[in-house]
Amino acid sequence: MTSVFLTHLAAVLDNWDPRVVDGIAAKRYVVTFDNRGVGASSGSTPRTIQAMAKDAVTFIRALGLEYVDLHGFSMGGMVAQVIAQTDPDLVRKLILTGTGPAGGEGIKDVTRLSHLDTVRGLLTLQDPKQFLFFTRTANGRRAGKTFLARLKERTQGRDKAISHVVRRSAQGHSPLGAGAAPRPLGHPPAGARRKRRERQDGSDPELGRPGAASAERRVPNGELVLYPDAGHGGIFQFHGQFVETALEFLER
Image (cartoon, rainbow, N blue to C red; front, side, top):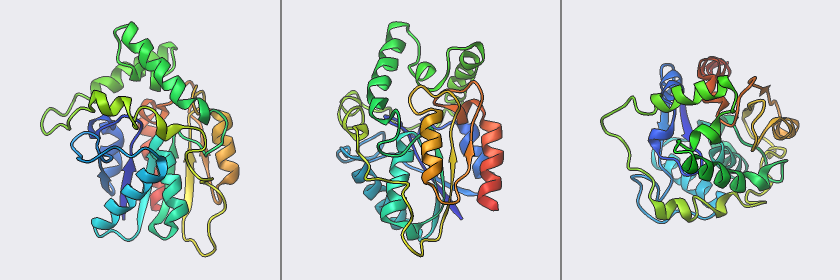
């Protein structure tokens, strides 16, 4: 069974933690890709979550895949929810990380908080991901530094960096607007064959515990995992635990 990874806002392939990708790929076939107009992908960047979901479905079907597991992180989780709603027969199992449902608590603030953390990183001469993904505790700062170091491990065949134009256009603004996704995580259509797992960190300033609990209540057969002292990138801070429990869920 193939696992397709859907990435976060303004991300290219090299923004995936190699411990997460390699950990899952040790047991399963993993596919990751750049959204249209991002990194090495050509075309114009979609302006809505729905358009990104349609692109993802087109890409998956172009690979000849008829039935996949989806892992969506942050914005990718929003895309994954739409796919599960519009193309339920394509999805076997769904893992959502650092994300939430449309209209859920904190969703409308995601873009604003992302911009604030990006500015904070620029003003302090630090990588914005240190603020976007990790808490400001000693553990969070340490986890952020080791995560950023892991992103540089692969030195050959690296993806193209996201352009400034794309970062300031659809990828950086409109897709995460309030109500961008049409009620994903509702009850599945009759006969849909899938199980879902909701994984979320414990103190995510953008999409934290209330949003995770809200999503869990809406997900048939859903399971919720919280990480202590973790920010938006809890799966990167606790990559070992995440990979272990994700594989157990996928192989169950």
